[in-house]
Image: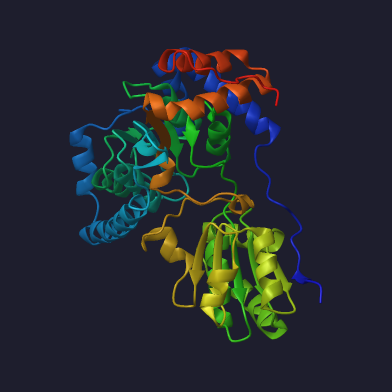
Length: 435
């Protein structure tokens, strides 16, 4: 049967609206021209903060002293998991070389970028986990300088738990500045910081648009839209857990899509019946977000069988993908488009968001169809090199000269010609493009 929508979204998430774009361009241009002083003007306007931009050691220690010991232990636990997983990922990239032709050696090196700028949201929610995810992976990758940037709160500064997380994860500098001005400061190398080679971390639509505009001048992890999550569940799934997981992700924001894909009408109807009460039980701000997200963006899709369910999921290419269905290995082998996969009822997206070790900075808005999430690899340049002997260069030079002339690139051809003439004087080579 064709997919049946038991609940259909009435709105679709959109990012990069023209008014946001124009605002961000104006701010970036102002700060690039005006430097530190202009960035401070915007910080005073938007952050309502006029304290130190770069936290001193004393300020860091004072913030750390405010963090309860139990929370410190939880942050250390999460950091250790993320660090060990990142180290495993780094181990999958090696410097290698091979003999292309006898005497002609080519290789690759993995070189970390020098400076990373890690944006850590601190507005409506204090994203402690984002500090762990971004700073830890940059540190494990081997970046020489890491700036953690987070919006300060009036009269408070950067949330103490974010300061603690950024500090223990390896940030060289912690910057109390949010929004476009924070992104600009890291990109342009303000306040004595090195210019960032890469910007990573989630943020609001203004931060996302700033990264989009600056991409090319700096690297970025991805252009992120509203977070999204999809659950694949069969008739044996626990409807209460499925509904709870959907609501847990809907609280991210008013435009955060959540999707349920199932082959069981009974399960779908049970889940839809449970969601409103679970949303009503949330605290005020969370309830407002989840209510709007479920009402306007959520979908419940009924499929004929698990193959159609998998195909539907791959079409959506969700940021977070949960499987609560039999035969988990089948799903692991079959599914191809997702940011991060959570197999079985025993795990949940919340684990990955906070503490289990995999990264929570993931592709949204269907981008999982072509890219993965943040990892140590995002901070590393895979570069190539080669060397050869004179004798080994002969055949390569002949082929290069002929191909270049066929393309009409005579200068390229002559770079090969001169080597043949020098290394093999007296030998005649057919270097024309014609057969």
